[in-house]
Length: 415
Image 1 (tube, one colour):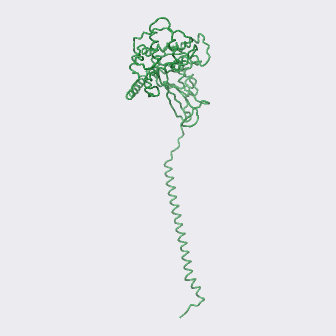
Image 2 (cartoon, rainbow, N blue to C red; image 1 turned 180 degrees about the horizontal axis):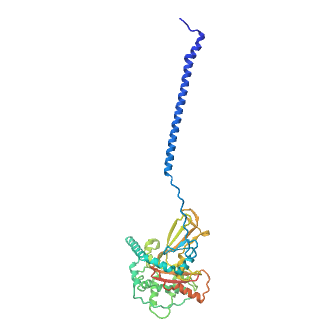
Image 3 (cartoon, one colour; image 1 turned 60 degrees about the horizontal axis):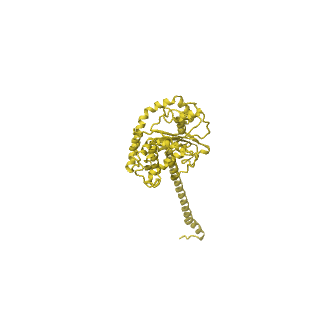
């Protein structure tokens, strides 16, 4: 039997131990490399498929770009300059300024606009009456009117109203007060209300009361005779917070507003005062239903074109007399003309959150039953004979008609 020699032992160890171990390690490394390569190729394929799906979905959502429409440029109907406003009645012609609108109105657009407006006047009147009736119905469901509107209509329709003019004495530069009192006493619904002493029957005011004093004033006016002195009324004006008097010439407009607000306060005292009465109920007093109206202010941002509107209750309408104003229509057109807010008068837009250029326009949203117009002159005017004739024409225009205005009272104010 052959026995291995000691010299062959390392060779046998190398063949039977080391070589199989090395082979096993190499096979494991190759197998791991193959698996890694397969994993990489699989991930690459998945990434390619995901990219293909994302590309397909994004392609489906792509909206073809359409060039924005070019802004339409409108021309002024008079001077053919770029127009920024349009006629508020017919909406068919545009103007670059309020002055061009007034000139074009005189040149014949007045007739054209009236013809276009006549076709929709009946419809607008029906819609307005329906809206007013609906609003009054909603108000009646929750609130009770402080003065019935039906009684106010009866005052307007009353045919027996014999109020002969009677002069008032000038009690030391009290001409401003005399003018206001004559206007108020010649206001038909208010005068009838005072003549019938409807307030004093239920008056709960302790001490001197303005409405009770006006009732006495109307009674004395109806007695006839010579000029009447309003000293009794004027001497008690401090009881309602009036600091006017003392022989000084005061502002007629301020005196009128003081009288109206004082009468409004008296009408609300029985319910706890103005702070305790709902704002909608406050609009049902006699004073509010006669003189009250609502003004709308509309501001349009010229950057984002956002429009905002706010409403304000008014007792009168203040109109400026400028050089080119020759009639009440001109003054009203100037009042309702669009105004550009720019420079130091820029508008802060809530949407843009910064000061921007804007366009503001005022309009009468709800016309009062009796419109009180206050004419303001903010510049020095030499009142020659021609200027006086122009002012008379401005105050008493021939054939001037405003729908929903039943009576127009005027006050002159030389500011």
